[in-house]
Length: 163
Image 1 (cartoon, rainbow, N blue to C red):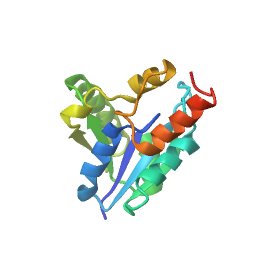
Image 2 (image 1 turned 30 degrees about the vertical axis):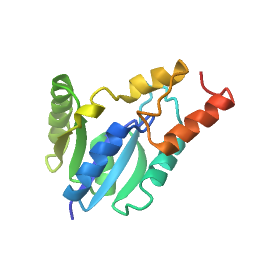
Image 3 (image 1 turned 45 degrees about the vertical axis):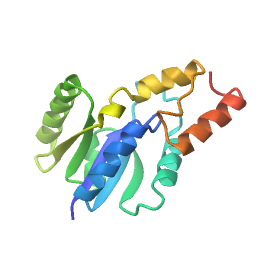
Image 4 (image 1 turned 60 degrees about the vertical axis):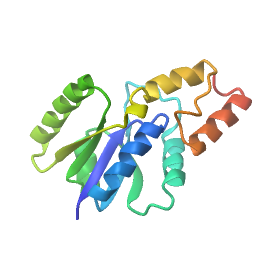
């Protein structure tokens, strides 16, 4: 069985993430979306909220499951029995950074291979960091995030919990 982990913060989930996930589905029997908790980063949205979005977005896709993890990505791979890590690439500098991480992961566990997918050109500029900045400044993110995410953002804007 080909099992893959797609790690990231997904804060928030964007169309770029969805694109990579949907194009990876034919490659794997199971795709775990690993929501990494990083003690050095303060997320805009809770891990539970991000899991909820992913469950809603992929509710009709049994191959996809969201998990939350802390620590090393290779440790999460072991927990879910994944031998592949999926990473999305937007720019050349993304590849250089991601290759260094892939090499480190391979050093930690030789059985884990990293697979890179390039995003569609229309999603090249869609990064969660930039989307969060637009949200903080009251901008419209409807072209960057799927409906479940947009509904949450709009609800939070209306209750003044964001911005």
